[in-house]
Image 1: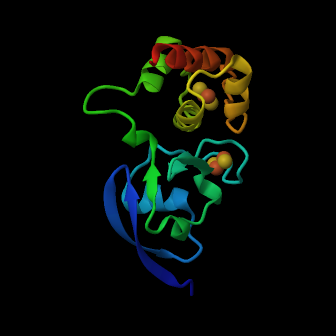
Image 2: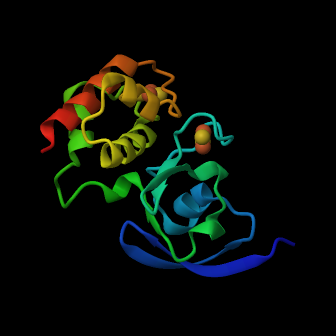
Image 3: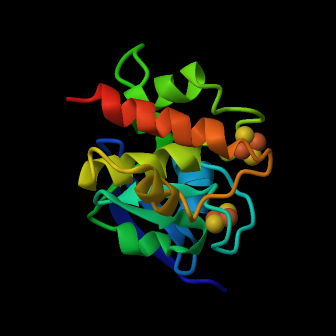
Length: 157
Ligand code: FES
Ligand code: FES
C-alpha cells in the first residue's frame, strides 16, 4: 500500500492541508485534491508543458513534480492570476491576439510566460521563444502566442 503523507501547501495564496500518496504528483494534487482543474494533463511525461505551474515563482511541470516537494511552499496556478473579475494582462493579451484556439495548452503557456516576464520584463522575440520552448501547442498557433506575450510585455511598465 502506498504510504500517505500529510502536509500543508499554499495554492494561490490559500493554505491547504493535504493527505496524499508519497509518490503523488503535483498535477494530481491540484486537480483531484485541491479541485483546481485549470492546470491540464497532456503527455504526463514532462514533454508538453500543459501542466506548468509555479512553485515559489519558478515554473515546473507539475506532472513530473512530486506533490510532497511543495510542502510549506507556494504554488501558483492559472486560477491564481486574475484579480477579481479582471484577467491578468497576459491572459487578456492571449485573447486580444487570438493566442487561444482549443485552449488546452493555454494555461501552461501563460504560466511559462508569466515566469519569463518576472525575470525578463522586456524579452526579445528570441527570449520569448526560449521561455516557451517547453510548451507545445498542438493547434500550432505559435505566432499568435508570441505576439500576445510580446504585447503583454510591451504594455507593462
Ligand atoms: S502533462 Fe506535464 S509536461 Fe505534458
Ligand atoms: S491552442 Fe490548442 S493546443 Fe494550443
